[in-house]
Image (cartoon, rainbow, N blue to C red):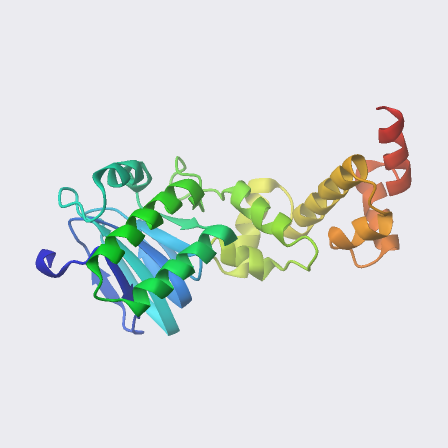
Length: 263
């Protein structure tokens, strides 16, 4: 296998389940469609902007679902495809297998690099250069889906990852299915595990984040209450006022006046 190993590969997977185990680290990033992946006892569905850290010697299975494409970076321990410095910087992320999420800016840059790789599949220097950039990008934007120190059975969500996703979409409705997809789970399993970890339902958690953002806008800006309502994703101003008062004990206008008078 080593003689044909490439630093960067673009692959499309079939629906047939494959079992792999190799003596090098590997990073897999979803570009299009879905891949079903199982590693370290965790079965997840990987979509665009999500990925898997595959550690050396760790068996894993995977298969594609429909039209799909993945980006694979291979990292042999001693045969450095990429610069040695970058290789060494990324190794701490590969101390154990796991799933991760990339933010929108990282996803966009990766898609641009993939376009260049697709146009020039035989350019070895381009592959090395893009690989170095991709690894640096991963180090800066890596967001593990689960807390790394938890056992497999009790592994908990990385709430920072979910918070970032929710805040980036506050103006729009946010469903349980959307949140579940961020941590590679089905709706019912996500709902149960989320409530167990946080003590509240996903919808209530999202509502509290909406109100928290509204508090910041009321405190730090002169934005109208109508605009705050829209920015924080409430269906109407009356609905916003009702929820805001229930959680904070103040109406939006009273909250703003109280904060302003305390400055």
